Image 1 (cartoon, rainbow, N blue to C red):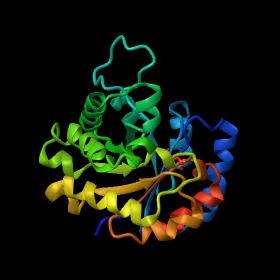
Image 2 (cartoon, rainbow, N blue to C red):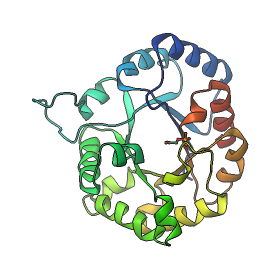
Image 3 (cartoon, rainbow, N blue to C red):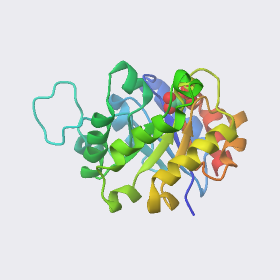
Image 4 (cartoon, rainbow, N blue to C red):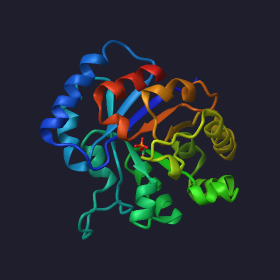
Length: 247
Ligand code: PGA
């Protein structure tokens, strides 16, 4: 059985006061023992604050990115996997489409970051997804395959089992357009097949305008093991309803 996982990606949002309010509201609702696992990914400067606020809860911490450089050194602005692990992070999002497009991250750099994450004991959440143009030209699966292959070819069998994948169609991110559960399921099944044997245990999350109202139908799909939630994760109540669906 794969344990459902819901990660809230706060992107560049938050403040010390707003974070405190969010956590107190969310933890007030998310009580007891849960089957689903929940994590939040705040901007990196807030990780120590969130680590403290979440320390007595079952909510894990995730980072939104990491440096491909493992060793400390002269890399201005970079944050290493070891530093994130030191701040109690369990997960790190890698290759988000916003980083691939605004920061020109290549498949190769994404693969290096996945390895850096494993080397620091973090669980990489590898994001893959096609643009609208690619979907309309019928190349969705070949784009996903290239994004997956670049990473899978660099991993050994043990690492492969520890990977989390997030399928996020670029046209659905922040646009209010969710992929239909059937569209998502088709790609999730394909991603699972590309993982080979590890496919039976690797969790594949869906991301792209997930809301409380769309979560149930998405999570009912055989190969959808949770969600990577952006906009709807900023509202503690809405995010809680998504987590409840997964639970
Ligand atoms: P969204 O973002 O839920 O706001 O579409 C998802 C993501 O970018 O991870």
